[in-house]
Image (cartoon, rainbow, N blue to C red; front, side):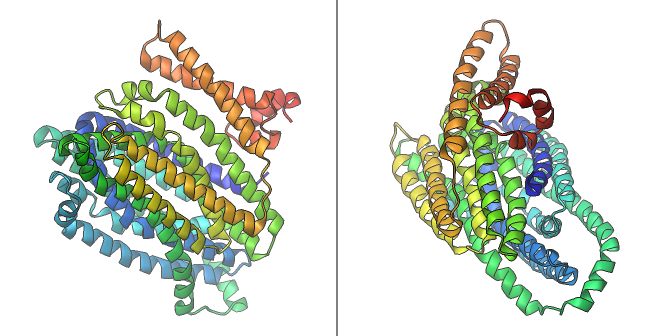
Length: 528
């Protein structure tokens, strides 16, 4: 049973709780602000995510990789030096990012041709990058040491605090001043949450270091001190390509933000309606972010796990972890995509009843889940193998595809906002395919197409047909809220039942999933 899957499970549990709290945050925010106000809120987050790319992706991945490499040979003195250097670097980057948001808000709005009300949402986020940078340095350290619990707990704390303060401020400011100020209050929740989470992680780090001092002192006698210049060079060599790769993903969102007003304008849609449609797209994106939790968790644990195997040149272990990662993602992403698609309108009727076109957008946007989840894993594998430039180049190609499709399709009146949906799916599909080709050439993985793709696809299709039938049947006598919840639960049962019947999942794979051991104990005889 793979230890990195267990580590991913710990992060995934924290991530799932965090995402559920995030939904509990965004559902009332979407209701309070409506599609227009949510559009203002969503505008600010695409800029924010791009600025955080270095802090939350590039350097933490480099930290976890460099720490895993040193921890695998018990060089704990080197581990500590990597952490100290990365903390200083991230504090500087976080300070610059926060200053840019605070002092550059009006300039950003002018360049993007956004509604002026976006100003409050940007200012509400301004303090967050500084504290998030400190958080990510500590999380990167713990993940490199393959200690996932502190990160999981910190995710829950961050989301919980954001829910309380974000919703509270959003309600108060919307009632007192209006939607724009309410969007600013919702954004400010992220800054307050970052402060609270930083305090927790600093405490956790302090507790850990008390016991870690002895291993550090022991390793000083065995290993030479690496110069900060050498460490910085290695950190930059890893972080820059990873950051660029993630920046291109963030740029997908920025391309959306910077093109939707002008291109929908060509299609005859005014700024306010364009902002409403973009808000609906953002709400749809919120829903697909829930299943993405597991791919994010597995990606974070996959980098140090494969890096450790790569450090000792264990190619068999690398192939096994890569193949298991791809298969696990498809087992999860395919039914999630089908489920979100068939229940898109009922979900929006339940969670965001005032949305203009959210259900229709989610019906198609749901299928991007498959390519995003698989793409995340493939990118992490390449980064673990020191193939940092390949994902960057592949994402650059995908970004061009994204921009071209956005530019052409959104200007067509009959397609309008759905051009953004098509470009999302197309861009992530291109990335996944190119990354897979690169990995195939590098480690010669052998994917069992029938077991990895065809069987989960068959099970998802049967689940989808059953899901439509059962929802329509129950809609005659159950309210939508209860009907959706029951139908989703029954769909999950049907999916795994079909997988087991067609031998699409092994005992070992099922045992790794929540509640899987109990299922194996009861039905072990009919599972391969």
